[in-house]
Length: 274
Ligand code: DGT
Ligand code: MG
Ligand code: MG
Ligand code: MG
Ligand code: MG
Image (cartoon, rainbow, N blue to C red; front, side):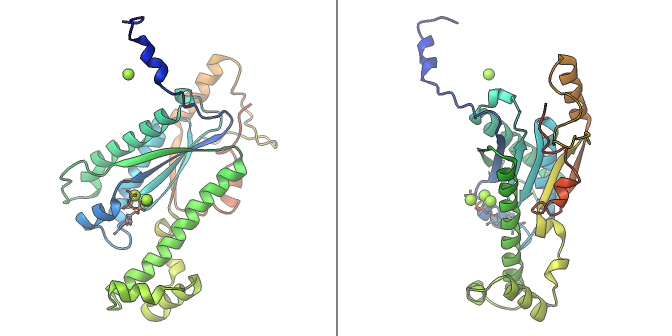
């Protein structure tokens, strides 16, 4: 059928390759999780089982795409960072976004019984949408990740204060909302401390910072930010590099990625290739 008279319909398809030399972020987000978390009675404000489930699904996605250098997750979302030099699927946006989102969805549903013990998943309802965003500079990619982590912090501080007011403080949802209207971070910290004896900074890192998943393949990096190991050139070198990445340990952490410390001690994560 290769050259049938119907072949011309192919030309209606649009080519959606993302520009070269850009970091590609595939962000997935749970569909309708406001409803789903109510239906399955997730703990408020944070359900540890559900977060562990998100993170376990993300580890499998990172494992199966060697071009992913790091992923960051919070709430019902995850951002997967593909290296600027990635050539997977010829960098076609739809293939990248759908492949990541569908694998994440499948992993999430399959791992559900292990993490949500005793909670029967009635339908494969937890599904995730996916989109690609390109960042042409390392600095902007860092700002993107900082934006997501700052969002995690702001939402978690709000939600922690809100649910303490409701669950321990006897306020209705509407009253708690009014209490928090116009408050800044310091006010919320004060409410948590004076009324509930909670030092927000001692809340678990996984809730305050979100989760970072990365491939730890500790390459030596030169002063110019380039990997010491040449990655171009012979095919066997490329194969070697790929094998090393596949074998690399996948680390899961809950630390600050807004400041420089995380990146400075792991320069290989965002290192460019020769
Ligand atoms: P969307 O993404 O437009 O389909 O709509 P939603 O409903 O997924 O909204 P989104 O993604 O903006 O917000 C995530 C929702 O999931 C939000 O209502 C809070 C909820 N959620 C996420 N993690 C937890 C958790 O650990 N516990 C509880 N109780 N709710 C959570
Ligand atoms: Mg949304
Ligand atoms: Mg959502
Ligand atoms: Mg969300
Ligand atoms: Mg096919």
